[in-house]
Amino acid sequence: MNGNLINNNEKGWKTAVRIGKTAARLFNKKGYLETSMNDIASKAKMSKGGIYHYFSSKDEILFFILSNYMDLILKDLNEKLSNFETNTLKIKFIISRHIDLYTKNLPEAKTLLKEANCLPKNKFDIIAEKQRRYFQIVSSVVGETVEGPVKKEKITALTFLLFGMCNWIYSWYHPKGSITPQELSDLIYDTFLKGMSRFQ
Image 1 (tube, rainbow, N blue to C red):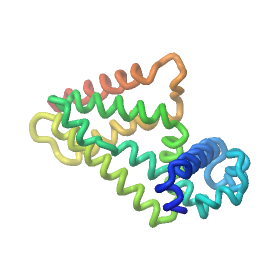
Image 2 (image 1 turned 45 degrees about the vertical axis):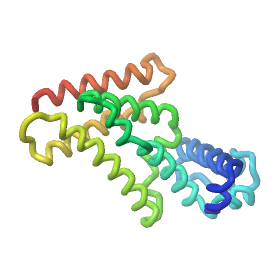
Image 3 (image 1 turned 135 degrees about the vertical axis):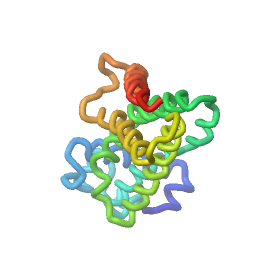
């Protein structure tokens, strides 16, 4: 990846993002393994050499997509959560924000859920660490919401259940359908809080 070209040049950054979004759509449609650099170049209306000007390999494009999406998820999250007085409001915010980012970045979100394991180990480990940070933040809020002594394993299970509710929508949900993203967020929040009530 030509880091200097991408990070220190606004035009270069925008082009890299456009390549990433194009590639993510192709990965969703064809699968990562089945998508070639020629496919990406053709869909992005660039020469193959133009693609290689920014990324040296398909792995680097995949890493760029996933890393940027996770950075978006993590950006200022702790700071924003500190603005809420109660843990239930924090959970509501986490769910609403997660669904909002998902629906506004569908190709990238789906690529994260379906294709991350295609990364080489060194790059996969970086993405996995960012995912762990996100999990730890959400798990901490879930743990603080539960009143009384609850085993750590149950807090972990509750957090995974919450992520399951938010992430599994990739298999059926369309943001332009009859249920709006906000309505979906509210449904997940209500269902999750009712499930947690047994721990109160």
